[in-house]
Image (cartoon, rainbow, N blue to C red; front, top):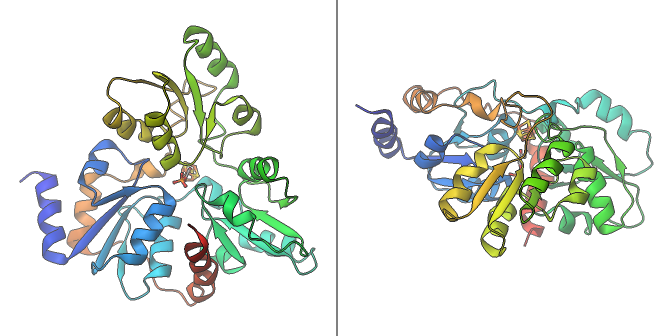
Length: 305
Ligand code: 13P
Ligand code: SF4
């Protein structure tokens, strides 16, 4: 039997739902019940009535779903699917850093561990970050973690001063500005569109900056026919589906590697999704720390329009 049919049969039999991020491979995107960016998927995870959630994304996303649904079984096809950005903010160092400030207000990007979430006042995603930053009290020092590129970008957009943790994503820091500008000479009408995890100098040269969902919306709204896309290349599958007549050029990395593919996201495969549904494993465990981590996450979902 083919893998997709087996997955669909297992989903029905076990009342399971597959949530997948836009950075998954095209075949996983096609088998998903819901496809989205990190905010869309957190919202879906909060609302689903399924008994089992299979999260085709990375660990912090699946753990976020478990935090919001402690009684549900949340499966991740490959437990090793971590995130370099989340790893760039170890909880003990973060706690030491936080303790240097008097009565700080902490906003953490959703790409962080449950430990960091539990030490935060509010979570944001790349979709709602500006909106969330504007909610911060003005009379307390504002700390932002873990992505310094997003932090710098937010600071520029809002004029709100923040102390920023020096973390970054290996995929979004890989793009070569020089090669992108060379591509622009080759395609003078192309627009550069970028995810805010990219470095500030590239963001400043981009025609549009936004989360994965915002980039997808932008390519349909823009009159441009050609786009240089500075984010993980998995998103191109949906871009081509939405706008088959338009041209999408993945922004080139500095070296000749395939570094514009997230090695963690790409650990998931159809076979691993099938095995996860069959075995109901690997499962994200329930942890007592999730109670604290849930508060800033729920606050974000309540405040996010
Ligand atoms: P989005 O919020 O756009 O889904 O980004 C998540 C992510 O991991 C980007 O690297
Ligand atoms: Fe983490 Fe970067 Fe992969 Fe997103 S693309 S999951 S930030 S390593």
